[in-house]
Image (cartoon, rainbow, N blue to C red):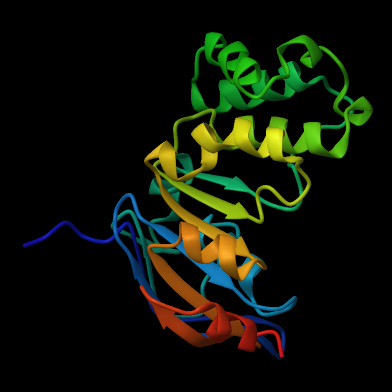
Length: 226
């Protein structure tokens, strides 16, 4: 038998009250592969990431991450995934280094790794400034450091380079890009760039899967936004 998928969804359903945010989503992501999720605003992309991060409970179908069934075995998954969302999940009044030390303690990570990560994203000299005084792009870089601090096996990335200039985006590539070697789920509004990164594609509209598979065209992705 081959290696089990890192992520396996079969008919995933998630609702907010009477509104169905995800409706019958099925996809399998091999270990080390990148799933790119396309769709207009409100399609369910961020909800999908939050389900996979164990922040939201799936309400139908089957959801497995790293071989563990959600929500029953969510506690086995939380320390093995990293989330980089639209919200940086950082304390604005703490410095970048203090934020990362807080997360290091949660995951029993040595502090030495913090300086190495800040250096990698060009922020070692800004590490003792409060997050509220950093630019939006700098905050995104600190949030990326937080997401990978504990060496997660799976990365969940909500448009990870949306606020970054090209140089900053390049600095994040070893942490959260394809070269990181991790299984990744990446949301994107950019058909060309997203398809270039994707091993597996999922297109959502209104919470429903309308495009799937390992091969998809830019024209098919753009059709999701019409």
